[in-house]
Image (cartoon, rainbow, N blue to C red; front, side):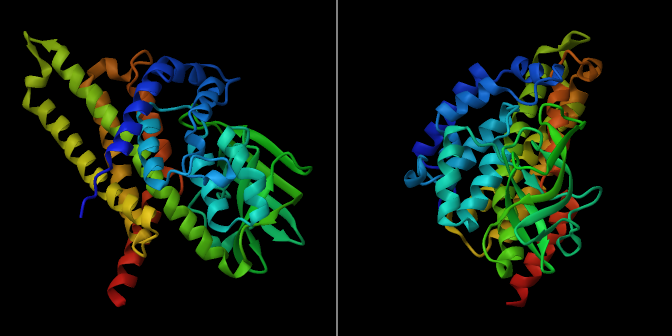
Length: 371
């Protein structure tokens, strides 16, 4: 069995890397970091929409390219490598997949074409404060077509046009589609470790919403949505991890101390080698996740959890050791190391922290072994 990407998919990755290396440099990322009035980079967002990436997995009938999930995986990796300061994951991993998974025909026709063109931005409103979201204890309610509750923090919540809100309907968790321009929605930007991806507090007071799927299927739809997004997010993390290892390696070859490159020191070699190994382990798990995602395999929960855990570990380690390899300079504002560390820490808690995904993996393996 061949788990590698096809030549066409590799070509797509090459073209995406070339485009982002020219348009999404760290200088452009820093513009969003330094300017509090910029919640995201509108120029880069417009560019990726024009490239058709937002519609890569959207069927042609709804204005997309109709490619598939494997193409989304390679695009996610390149977006992560570039640290793109845009709401790509919230829109393409969450809103698009939620609509494809459980949206009605009317909902798909209304939003998927606008997602593909870049005029609709998505968000996942799941967290209600510190700790992992607990579907059995959601305080946000959905009754008589109205949403009430508070969600914090919500990634891209300050700029999103629509949100997938996890709410409780009749004692059961359900994903609810909410137009954030509707009356009763209030937003407040909140600060996080990585300002290049903005967050907000969303308060809903009698806000009209539309359930995605049937109430009885709510918990299953939410779990599947999270698994699908987790695989895509793992590729984004791998992209960042690979770039961090490359940065550290390049610096170790160029930086001289006591008349020799610091890369010649065994301690530095060990850091770089361990980072490379962790990245390869993460990539192997992510490829397993990509296979499960693209084939709708029953192994998706197991594969998603494994890819998520390995990717979190790889990106955190690579970003941390990149700073250490750069020495004192690695801690400074001027050097780009902290950009990768910020993003690694942020993505590690997006969709739930590693502890939650460890529990998911254990649960998936127990179910598999009991069958």
